[in-house]
Image (cartoon, rainbow, N blue to C red; front, side, top):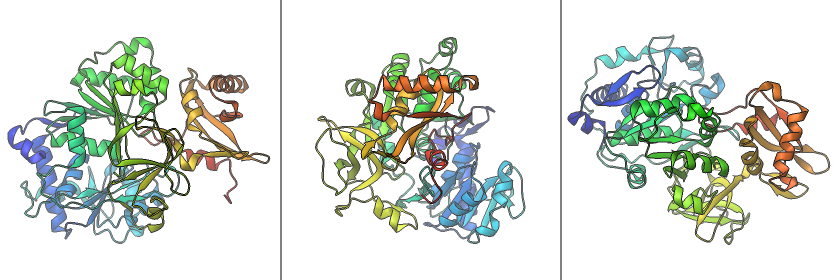
Length: 511
């Protein structure tokens, strides 16, 4: 299904509800807005296979813009609304966008990239106008509300969030299939999470990220209502579940941690009985955190491991997870291999790079070197997201860490995620990052940077407490030798930690 088919049956049903303002976009409005913009793309000369980019916060028309590009057979790149001029210009130019859409609240940075993005032919601005931009509203006002004649499915081309370097665009082939044709993700969602047209899906993360964008569009294909939070707040999230009878939602582990650290009276204040499916991904969840969430919400917590690249998909439900604590799932798409540096398969229990066989083909746009680095060294067509992990005897995958974050201290491999998972649940820790810093004798030593729950607690006393806490639970060599404190850690709004930015502060610029 797709919005047009749903609008034909239930035109006044909410397709989008903005959590903060309460603004509603009905399925009729979603269909008409996306059709108008698709016509505007064609009038500007954009044909299937061309590219558009848009930088919007969680705007009421965000999903309409995405649907317009999708139904026009275009590649579309939603971009973080938090980027600065150079970062934004790089992505818009790198993806080859012929059209760029933004909004008046982001006009300052949107207008700053005009000179650096000469290939952009159409610049549209929502909610106002700025130099070099045409009014979005005026442009689409005269366009038909009916579908374009050559409607076909495009594809997103999303950029990594740049946690380990320059963002890279992940490009998969657009199917150009009829809009009525389903896709693999919709089928997975239907099979695993059993949504229906009566479902209410709560999206607490920025829509420009892969999972929120793709899941919102998928739930709209099924006729569900999508509730969009402009920004995540742990207690507001619980209130929204009660207010709208939310049935499905997708979160990241940092959101779980923030909700668990709410006062008990706030956690018990709201009726969450409508929630039948809480999905989480993006990062492995510390075992104690997931145990507490399942104890609180019941066995409705579902986890999957996948990437923007779409080369594999692993899944685990609550019951299987409780029997294989710490796993990120068992493969549903792609055969999982754990390989050593030479690409040789490793037996269960041994750590190595996680590769997928028979996964979807992808490339990093304009960067053949990065594309090759994601392929197995033996040339078998297997691909990796760059994670380290191991399989158990039942085929469940356990992630150790990102390959690029591994610490080598005195010749020993240390995976900082282990210490992060321990420290994240300490009651005085609001957020934590662990990484390697230079050490003249050992090469690297383990460093933790912590955001304390209250700034007044930061200092030598808490540092000693956290190191001792970690050493009670992990081998000493895996624990931080020192702890620094910050008011806030640099996180992507989806919850992903910009560890590179912290790590770079401790290393000479020559490295």
